[in-house]
Length: 143
Image (cartoon, rainbow, N blue to C red):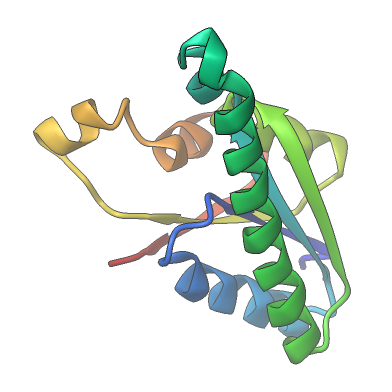
C-alpha cells in the first residue's frame, strides 16, 4: 500500500514518537522512508540583517541533527532512508516534496494547540499540510 513514507520534522523533541510511527509503517510495507526538514526562510528573513546568517546557520544545524535522527531511526528499523533539507515555507515545501517525490503517506506530529496558542504560533504547519496534501497524512499527537 505504501512504497514511500515521508516524515516531516521540525527537530522538536516530539519527533521521536512521530518517527516511530513512520518507521513502523515503512518497515511493515517495505517502503522507503523520506525525512524532510524545512529551513523556514521567514524566520531568518525576519531577523535583522546583522543576524540573518547566524539564524539561518542555526536552523540548518538543527535540521542536520533532526535528519540524522531519522537516519538512525530508519537504520534501526531496517528501512531505506532518504533525507532532504529544503528551504521555504514549511507547509508548502512539504506538500511540494510529497508531490514531486511520489510520496504515498506523510507522517507529521502536532502539539494539538488550539485558540490563542495556535494563533500565537502562526497556525499549525500540520494543519495546513492536512488541508493541502496530495496524499493521506497521518497526524501523531505529541506532548
